[in-house]
Length: 613
Image (cartoon, rainbow, N blue to C red; front, top):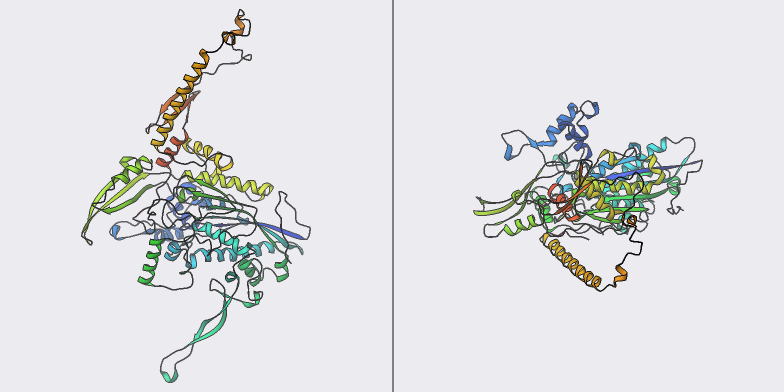
């Protein structure tokens, strides 16, 4: 019988004949791949790889070949010119999942490539579009189980004497569909209340060969062999099942047994405890139908994917059991309040500390680079006005007016005029460091003294905030994330002006009321109670050697008419932005506009408001 584990604040040491492990599993996001990003950065000599005096930062000949083949492309638009950078996993920056991985001990950590990606290879359409196939959510979870079993086996080989593995503490991280994979991974390994269809196996057949044709006819018939398959329609060995079902710890338990890493007796005494689950903006967007081993090709597959992206996805709460995770110590979920794409619906995390951050999907989870953002915000027939939409985006401070242009173009094939709204602006990526810093704080707090054996660096040191806008934003958000502060919602200029007018009116009324009361005061109450003959009673007393500061405070206004408080301290100017002025600064310089009608599957919802489940 397996033991029951109760979380506490202590850090019990294993008995003399026992060994405990602490391991982290990091599921990267859709179209995010640490290795592919590393190759591009080495080629371009940027960021972490800018210092080419370090041999490890230099791209090898093989890496250059990989990037030229997979990271660059030639399209009909640049057919006769140089290749341009592909819009795939090579082009993205590291996510917050990968960044946190970089500050943990390598021997304790396990990285799982992002959905739709393969190391040093092209991305896969079924993975990117549907979260399905061999690079999809479920197969990333299976890979997590397989790789974790191998890591446990390698650790077990290091044990001395006859020590037995009795406990493993696991920390799990994920972003986007990787967050869905992380949560499904916890369900796979940890849940005591799995759906019957997820644990049972069924009989099937596989082709093992073909018969030769009779009398030289050339006709061949397949030879079948009876097998067992699991819920992912993958073949399993009955020897490692219990009553036709997966053993303890689901597919991970099966891998530990089938690879000879643990015996059934060793598996039975093992405890696996999920200590920390840290996920960014869970977007499941998972198509179970396509993942059911249905092979589609050519036009049929293309039509299926397009139709699915046009209607969007459900929550996958049921199909991936995203809230049926069993017991765990701490879970944290950071989400994006300004995301609005149809295929990026949010699956909330019941039982987690859940906080909404200004910005869109990758503003919170990372992967943006410091480049010019160009998006087709909207398109319409020539008769549909786009000026109102343009004005609205300016009023909400997503764009300056000069960053938006309305173009009219004649479509030759359709023989109609098309009108489109294009936005172009320069944005920076460092805002995503703020949720990264906060996630590390939650993680270290949960680890307690164990952090010394897991964390080897600080993300605040490795990914610092180097300007006043971001530092003030972090300070403001800290009150909300760790304290009792309110969610940082955007308010329009009209709302702020109305509020300021009401404050001014209230102040005038209060002043008038106070003056009225003072006029009625009795003279004896306004008379000084001390001896007014002694001049010392009129002086403000300071401690000896006290110098009155000569700092100057002045009120200024930024280009949007927002009030700024500026203080000069010994020739250093410190600017304090009110929260709404600060949020406008973020929208203009750091927060992205995620929907783009020029990109497949990136269209907005009809209401421009994100769906949440």
